[in-house]
Length: 188
Ligand code: AMP
Image (cartoon, rainbow, N blue to C red; front, side):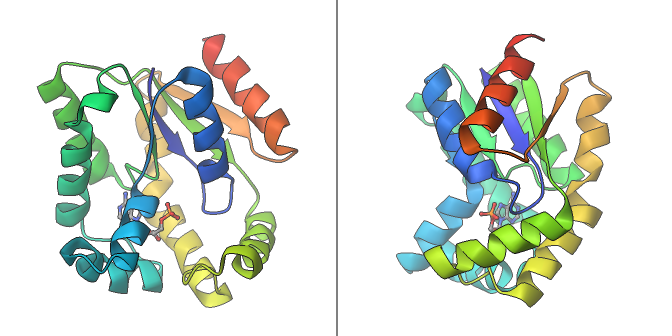
């Protein structure tokens, strides 16, 4: 299984990515998690990414694409992967295509978790209390939603055009949403 997971911030991508990865026995690769780990570890990559993640804007493609290219070259992805949070704009999607061509593999599915924006704002503000993420403040959440709408949402049409898109309603209990995704993907 080689899949990308799309959906607005707060739709539950991270939670579902971990559950789906376990179900399918493949690694979940979250670009947001990689950036956060690097920021915490004060690495060179972290220093480059920090200003963008904290502002809720996209880390430049050059940095992000190189990071994903390295990650996809590792041994644990040979039998599949679930990308959570990448690609985030059409240029990244084109770049992912070229990485997959180099690896001589193809994407099986693009899963989009849908959720209403008022609900995701509420969810993210709740998460801020629990996890204390630096980018879960209301102005930054609004910025992230705006970036999603302008940069990331066009990927829905991009993958639909290739017959790879599966859209799943992200509203409901965590396990229920996982079951919905698995059923939708496996019945294709
Ligand atoms: P996430 O955990 O997916 O919500 O990502 C948190 C932040 O990391 C985003 O707001 C961006 O600043 C950055 N980020 C994550 N994935 C990407 C990506 N594919 N391209 C650019 N920036 C990204």
